[in-house]
Length: 267
Image (cartoon, rainbow, N blue to C red; front, top):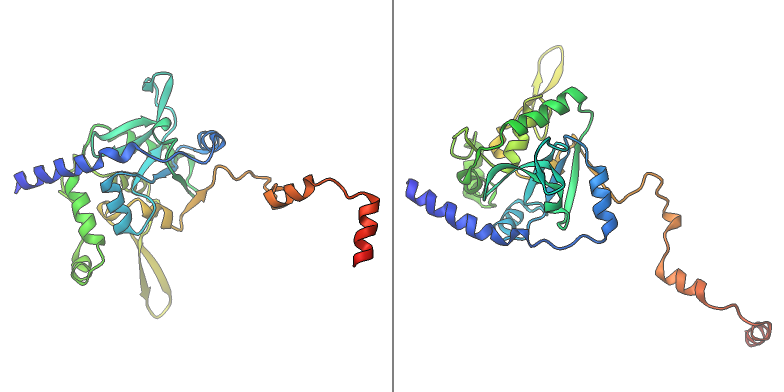
């Protein structure tokens, strides 16, 4: 069986190659805003453009095919003059650090854990940093696609599934890496909620899902992560928007008194 997975790994890696050809953001202002908005512990979701990314987006019914954890500047690790600030697991390299410029020309979304303490935020970032060098779990990607694929067979199979992937602690995918980091401090993403009732009370008990079951979209869907929009200023006032049609009207020269009298006579 190992030869089959080796061939699948090579195929997935080949399909992933065009993923870096991302469409540019709307403006340079959005790029600057993204740099200044990100905080350690934020999850950066990325819309990849490769064939495998398109498959992930289709199967998960989501815009997002990849996720990375923002940890802030990593001492001594740079790309020229730019520090590495992200930790991610990608198909080509496994778990690595990366500069923000890698995704500045991609469509992205910031998901920020609500109420995460400073000490836990530091622990989440440290957990991810300590996993640099792990390999990529190709089997987890294949299993996740089967798990999420919408058909009756997978629905029955899904109910019996506890974990996905190779089971090798030295291999991991992007969303699982981040899920494990938050699990380390017991921060919820999409926990399974069980209702417990007895004669005296009714309680909801949360159960952590296995990290291999997570996809990038889950950080967007989680009620415990806030979507942060970098280009939306704190003092936003919709009344100050300059609408094109109103600008054209405002640019028209005022009517002369004679013209105004002529219009009034016609009316």
